[in-house]
Structure formats: C-alpha cells, structure tokens
Length: 244
Image 1: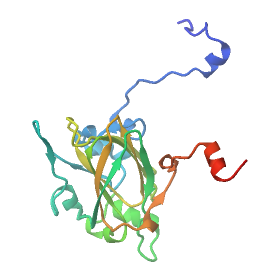
Image 2 (image 1 turned 180 degrees about the vertical axis):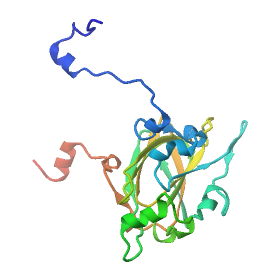
Image 3 (image 1 turned 135 degrees about the vertical axis):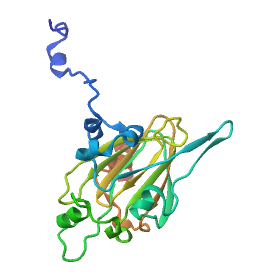
Image 4 (image 1 turned 60 degrees about the vertical axis):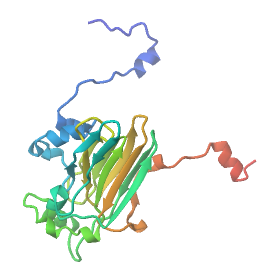
C-alpha cells in the first residue's frame, strides 16, 4: 500500500502518530487504558489475578431508581457482604465533592509493619499464595479506604507500592448512583496502594468514604499530586513576590 502521507511536509510526517483502536483483553486494559467497574464486577477474578492488586476489593451495590423522585442505594451493613467477610468496618466516614474536570492524588497511606518484621515477608504472609486470615490485617493501625460514589462518574487509578509485591496498576471507571449503568460498586483500597481520581464528564462527583482509622495528616502521603494545585499565572506570582 502506498504511503497516504506523502503530501505532508517532512517535519509533520516525522511527528505523525496514529491511535491504536485495538481493544485488548480485560486483563490488558485493567493495567493500561482502563476498564469499567461493570466489567470487573462480572469477570471471573481468577482470570484477572495476574493484574489484580492484593487487598483491593469491589463492593457490589444495588441502586433503586424512584421515578420522578430520585434514587436510593445502600453502602454497606456492618458484618455483612464484602466488608463483613474482610472484617473491615470504618471508624470514620466523610464526604468529598470533586468538580467536573478536576482530579485528586496520588494519595497513599503507610502500611503498619510489626516490630522486627521484614516488610516484604509481612506482605507475603498477608497476601501470598497462602494468605493469612483477614483477622491478621492491622486495620486499626493503618488506613484502609472504602470509597463510594453517589454522583458522577470517576476514573480511579491504583498503584501497588508495597515492598515485595509486584508493582501492579489498576485503572477503571466507577459509576455514581445517578448513572443508569450496572457498575455501581464501592472500592476497598489497602494501605500502601497509591490512589488517584479524576472526574469523567461534565457532572460534579460526590464521594462518601470510610476509613479504618481516623484522619491523621502524618499518614496522608502524596505522590505526583501537582494536579491538585492551581498555580497562578507567572506574572501574577512575580507581582505578588514583589518582582519588578
């Protein structure tokens, strides 16, 4: 086939690229271009283990739409469902609003390692081929998050930064309760897993989240979070600093 770009100038041809529209498997997309929560909820976990971050869980939810009135959906019940099976019940609940077009993160919380224990060996014990019972997870000493979205769609990115575990990436879109889709779910995020969010579309996102510990600024680590800052124009900054 002849080159269709021969009529372009050489610099433009050298800079030219084209998008790859190949979808890829769900496992491939999970760590690259992204998946949807609906896909992950319906998929067999065994088929995704090679790309799944240990400790991350989806909490399936049902949202009931009330015609002409609104919608209703539960988060979790203590001792029931996914959080019940994990023995995880938040000590603090909070809400956050993200305006359309904004993003948060990456945020990360420090894992608790028992005294005189190698971190890699500890994570192998908790999440290895023969994982320890969830009762051994130190929820009360490290912050695990359980996040739900009641409005707007949000893309979430997770990166496992725990010593001894593969550095895996998970990328997916979560639907708010106002969505008509079938991907309503909460997400459990372990300590040591960096997480970032960005709003998809033109609707503000509202999040409700629980944490296994109460808020501690010292346990709120940040990585590559410049997106959260809104720098002033350079000439404004120079003026404020008294530059002539």
